[in-house]
Length: 277
Image (cartoon, rainbow, N blue to C red; front, side, top):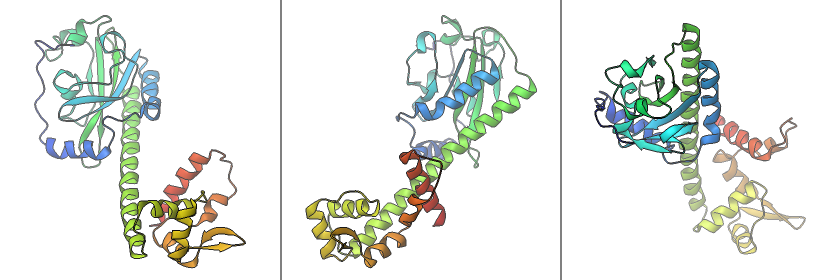
């Protein structure tokens, strides 16, 4: 796709901080389509359009988190920033709605307007952080002119805000886990753990997973584990490290719950543990 005649947008006034927020999300270049498909499906349903997509924009590209493109963008995962329509939505925290791009001075020369099928209607709803930085957009596309009523705009704005919150929570969760991991490794080093294998063995024991024989001996010699009825388990010292670093009591996993998906239950346990810190 080439964008001859289409002019790129000016950089937002907060571009430096905006880019830092985009990079902080850790989503550029990752495969998270299943997580964000719900939002684009909701957009299509509310807007009653054939195409919707969402993506983040860094200094070089727009990276798509979810899309159902038709035409020349089919299968695309990213496009150069200077060729995107969404770059023009970065300077505002309000929805950017274009009923007919064929007659819009900014977009009439964009190649997607002349593609098959042609992009005619476009609406971009910004993903706005609490600090006011626009990470990217969730967008609607139709191949004929159309409008959105006030109720649709309100609903779509709410969906975009919810997606932004999801990104923020995921970012905060990842950063908290990284900090917890750093603190844990420092604590284990204070207890004499000098190898990654021993640290991993300690974590496995905390989660009730198997521990290799050589690592068992290391944990026993450091006093982080003990044998109880022939089974390896955490010692008082090991339990102190575990709870002291916010790993959470193992009883949480044993609580009666209607959830049987172990991965989901473990994720919930992680969130519960972090909230206690």
